[in-house]
Image (cartoon, rainbow, N blue to C red):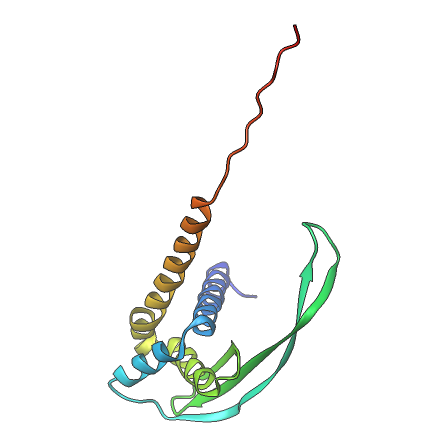
Length: 158
């Protein structure tokens, strides 16, 4: 039986890795390349799968509780690499950029290693998260600028 502490640690690792995978998927190739070039020691990565490009069906819903429907297909590129250290990294990204998927998989593997996790967090993931938050804030500000508040005046009957 697994102790509660080990379960909590496993859940935190999974949620942390999910966050890292999300940010790596939303990274731009230039961000990945710049941080890879800044690595003091370049990891040797062996391809396990891909990079390969395919299609994924995107599902949507109408309204808050509507039934799901197939909206269409999007192009996705995925890659899996194994570092010499034994860590295995996976990545998926929208589009057809195979090098982006390969680099993201390398950083996923590096994120799993204690020696390089902090570097990946500080040099890559935090700047990506900040860029995404700034873009969302800018979009919210632009949307708020066009907001119209309606009110109704009641006319009394005489």
